[in-house]
Image 1 (cartoon, helix red, strand yellow):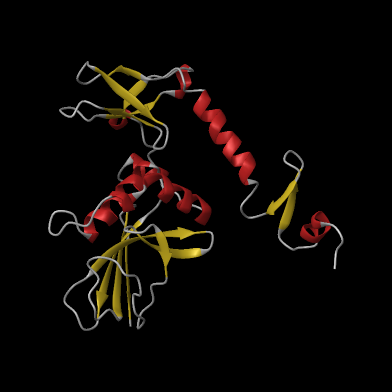
Image 2: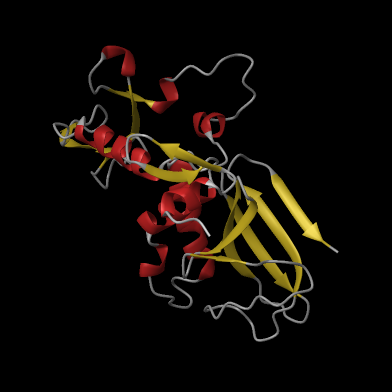
Length: 236
């Protein structure tokens, strides 16, 4: 047995050492303390940006959303979205539709061109920030489809490739909606009502105790509609 803790961790495979924080971390994840410090640094650069005039409605209602990295108009009659002109060296909103997409880019929108598959850790941090489970299930006003859509839309704004999942069950006409992400650990499913990662496999029960899930819940079909416009069907 190693006598010192640092010798023990150094002996483990897939670990690297951060000389800044004097700690070991998993190579595929990177040093999370360094990541958090980077995020805090980026946030500080925008402390002087509060609310500015919206080019569309001309009200002082344009707010910088640090999570989606977009300007959002808080005027409910406008709700315009803008991105930042980084070439100016200062915050300047320009309409998304004015962004020039390269001719060889076959994407139908700017969002689709920038969507990327996230790391599993990033997904969990994102879900902790969105907190979709704070909403209450209210049939028929707010059901599983609404929970999934909330996460799906938030992921799109954060430029994360996300799948809207519809689960079908063998002995029920009722389907259930959740979300999924293609991560560095493969395809992962998440229940928006809880924020937890779940095992979703054909022929197995959907064991989560969530509103909208039928009692007879043997999974027979899985349909995924990705926010990049692609679709995927998993069936026996």
